[in-house]
Image 1 (cartoon, one colour):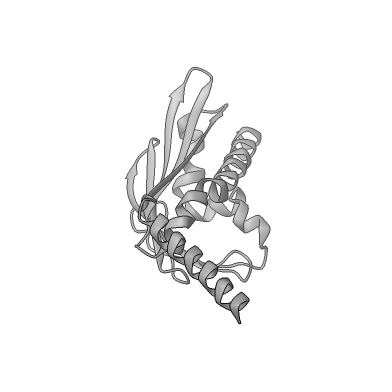
Image 2 (cartoon, rainbow, N blue to C red):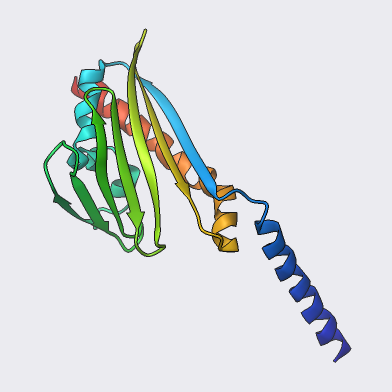
Length: 177
Protein backbone atom coordinates (compact mmCIF):
# COMPACT_ATOMS: atom_id res chain seq x y z
CA UNK A 1 0.00 0.00 0.00
CA UNK A 2 2.93 2.31 0.72
CA UNK A 3 4.12 2.00 -2.90
CA UNK A 4 0.67 2.90 -4.23
CA UNK A 5 0.52 5.93 -1.96
CA UNK A 6 3.93 7.15 -3.21
CA UNK A 7 2.92 6.53 -6.80
CA UNK A 8 -0.28 8.53 -6.40
CA UNK A 9 1.65 11.39 -4.76
CA UNK A 10 4.13 11.47 -7.64
CA UNK A 11 1.32 11.44 -10.22
CA UNK A 12 -0.52 14.17 -8.30
CA UNK A 13 2.66 16.24 -8.13
CA UNK A 14 3.19 15.91 -11.88
CA UNK A 15 -0.38 17.02 -12.56
CA UNK A 16 -0.01 20.05 -10.25
CA UNK A 17 3.32 20.94 -11.91
CA UNK A 18 1.73 20.57 -15.36
CA UNK A 19 -1.14 22.90 -14.47
CA UNK A 20 1.08 25.43 -12.64
CA UNK A 21 3.52 25.56 -15.57
CA UNK A 22 0.68 26.26 -17.99
CA UNK A 23 0.07 29.64 -16.31
CA UNK A 24 3.37 31.01 -17.67
CA UNK A 25 2.85 29.77 -21.24
CA UNK A 26 1.49 32.48 -23.56
CA UNK A 27 -2.01 32.05 -24.98
CA UNK A 28 -1.11 33.65 -28.31
CA UNK A 29 0.71 31.99 -31.16
CA UNK A 30 1.95 32.91 -34.61
CA UNK A 31 3.32 30.70 -37.36
CA UNK A 32 4.91 32.26 -40.43
CA UNK A 33 6.76 31.05 -43.51
CA UNK A 34 7.85 32.82 -46.71
CA UNK A 35 9.00 31.89 -50.19
CA UNK A 36 10.06 33.76 -53.30
CA UNK A 37 8.28 32.82 -56.52
CA UNK A 38 9.68 33.68 -59.94
CA UNK A 39 6.49 35.41 -61.11
CA UNK A 40 4.69 38.72 -60.73
CA UNK A 41 2.20 39.35 -57.91
CA UNK A 42 -0.57 39.35 -60.55
CA UNK A 43 0.41 35.77 -61.52
CA UNK A 44 0.49 34.55 -57.89
CA UNK A 45 -2.63 36.27 -56.53
CA UNK A 46 -5.27 34.20 -58.43
CA UNK A 47 -4.00 31.00 -56.76
CA UNK A 48 -4.44 32.55 -53.32
CA UNK A 49 -7.62 34.63 -53.64
CA UNK A 50 -9.65 31.72 -55.06
CA UNK A 51 -10.14 29.14 -52.30
CA UNK A 52 -10.93 26.52 -54.96
CA UNK A 53 -7.34 26.89 -56.20
CA UNK A 54 -5.95 25.90 -52.78
CA UNK A 55 -6.75 22.28 -53.66
CA UNK A 56 -3.96 22.44 -56.23
CA UNK A 57 -1.22 23.39 -53.76
CA UNK A 58 -2.42 22.86 -50.17
CA UNK A 59 -0.85 19.84 -48.51
CA UNK A 60 -3.98 18.81 -46.60
CA UNK A 61 -5.90 18.17 -49.82
CA UNK A 62 -3.09 16.02 -51.18
CA UNK A 63 -2.88 13.99 -47.96
CA UNK A 64 -6.57 13.14 -48.11
CA UNK A 65 -7.93 12.81 -51.64
CA UNK A 66 -11.25 11.67 -50.08
CA UNK A 67 -11.72 15.02 -48.34
CA UNK A 68 -15.09 16.56 -49.10
CA UNK A 69 -15.13 20.26 -49.94
CA UNK A 70 -17.96 22.72 -50.22
CA UNK A 71 -17.77 26.35 -51.29
CA UNK A 72 -20.14 29.22 -50.64
CA UNK A 73 -20.25 32.96 -51.09
CA UNK A 74 -18.86 35.06 -53.91
CA UNK A 75 -15.87 33.63 -55.80
CA UNK A 76 -12.54 35.36 -55.19
CA UNK A 77 -14.12 37.98 -52.91
CA UNK A 78 -14.70 38.83 -49.27
CA UNK A 79 -17.16 36.27 -47.93
CA UNK A 80 -15.94 33.35 -50.06
CA UNK A 81 -16.03 30.29 -47.83
CA UNK A 82 -14.74 26.75 -47.95
CA UNK A 83 -15.73 23.95 -45.64
CA UNK A 84 -14.01 20.59 -45.54
CA UNK A 85 -14.59 17.25 -43.89
CA UNK A 86 -11.81 14.71 -43.58
CA UNK A 87 -11.33 11.62 -41.47
CA UNK A 88 -7.54 12.08 -41.47
CA UNK A 89 -7.09 15.88 -41.65
CA UNK A 90 -10.07 16.93 -39.53
CA UNK A 91 -12.96 19.23 -40.34
CA UNK A 92 -12.77 22.97 -40.79
CA UNK A 93 -14.05 26.19 -42.24
CA UNK A 94 -12.28 29.08 -43.91
CA UNK A 95 -13.67 32.45 -44.94
CA UNK A 96 -12.00 35.37 -46.69
CA UNK A 97 -12.44 38.45 -44.49
CA UNK A 98 -10.21 41.07 -46.16
CA UNK A 99 -8.60 41.52 -49.56
CA UNK A 100 -6.09 43.87 -51.09
CA UNK A 101 -5.82 43.10 -54.81
CA UNK A 102 -2.48 41.47 -55.74
CA UNK A 103 -1.19 42.18 -52.21
CA UNK A 104 -3.04 40.39 -49.44
CA UNK A 105 -5.69 37.83 -48.56
CA UNK A 106 -6.82 37.59 -44.93
CA UNK A 107 -9.01 34.75 -43.80
CA UNK A 108 -10.64 33.30 -40.72
CA UNK A 109 -10.17 29.62 -39.88
CA UNK A 110 -12.35 27.57 -37.58
CA UNK A 111 -11.97 23.95 -36.47
CA UNK A 112 -15.27 22.83 -34.91
CA UNK A 113 -13.91 19.59 -33.41
CA UNK A 114 -11.47 21.59 -31.28
CA UNK A 115 -13.65 24.71 -31.03
CA UNK A 116 -10.55 26.63 -32.09
CA UNK A 117 -10.14 29.42 -34.58
CA UNK A 118 -7.39 31.61 -35.94
CA UNK A 119 -6.69 34.35 -38.45
CA UNK A 120 -4.52 33.63 -41.44
CA UNK A 121 -3.01 35.79 -44.11
CA UNK A 122 -1.14 35.46 -47.36
CA UNK A 123 0.86 38.57 -48.16
CA UNK A 124 2.32 39.13 -51.60
CA UNK A 125 4.98 41.69 -52.39
CA UNK A 126 7.23 42.25 -55.35
CA UNK A 127 10.95 41.69 -54.80
CA UNK A 128 13.88 41.97 -57.20
CA UNK A 129 13.73 38.31 -58.23
CA UNK A 130 9.95 37.81 -58.32
CA UNK A 131 7.29 37.83 -55.63
CA UNK A 132 7.68 37.09 -51.96
CA UNK A 133 4.71 35.25 -50.45
CA UNK A 134 4.41 35.23 -46.66
CA UNK A 135 1.89 32.88 -45.09
CA UNK A 136 0.95 33.58 -41.50
CA UNK A 137 -1.48 32.09 -39.00
CA UNK A 138 -2.18 33.72 -35.64
CA UNK A 139 -4.46 32.73 -32.86
CA UNK A 140 -5.16 32.50 -29.18
CA UNK A 141 -6.09 29.55 -27.00
CA UNK A 142 -8.16 29.44 -23.84
CA UNK A 143 -6.87 28.73 -20.33
CA UNK A 144 -7.06 24.95 -20.72
CA UNK A 145 -3.54 23.74 -19.78
CA UNK A 146 -3.50 21.19 -22.62
CA UNK A 147 -4.31 23.89 -25.19
CA UNK A 148 -1.65 26.18 -23.75
CA UNK A 149 1.01 23.45 -24.07
CA UNK A 150 -0.22 22.94 -27.65
CA UNK A 151 0.95 26.53 -28.36
CA UNK A 152 4.53 25.48 -27.57
CA UNK A 153 4.50 22.98 -30.43
CA UNK A 154 2.25 24.67 -32.97
CA UNK A 155 5.10 26.06 -35.09
CA UNK A 156 6.57 22.56 -35.48
CA UNK A 157 3.11 21.16 -36.28
CA UNK A 158 1.91 23.76 -38.80
CA UNK A 159 5.20 25.21 -40.09
CA UNK A 160 6.19 22.21 -42.24
CA UNK A 161 2.74 22.22 -43.87
CA UNK A 162 3.14 25.92 -44.69
CA UNK A 163 6.60 25.26 -46.15
CA UNK A 164 5.37 22.39 -48.34
CA UNK A 165 2.28 24.34 -49.38
CA UNK A 166 4.40 27.33 -50.40
CA UNK A 167 6.75 25.02 -52.34
CA UNK A 168 3.72 23.52 -54.11
CA UNK A 169 2.41 27.02 -54.86
CA UNK A 170 5.81 28.05 -56.26
CA UNK A 171 5.94 24.99 -58.52
CA UNK A 172 2.37 25.51 -59.69
CA UNK A 173 2.79 29.22 -60.49
CA UNK A 174 6.22 28.91 -62.10
CA UNK A 175 5.19 25.96 -64.28
CA UNK A 176 1.83 27.43 -65.24
CA UNK A 177 3.06 30.89 -66.21
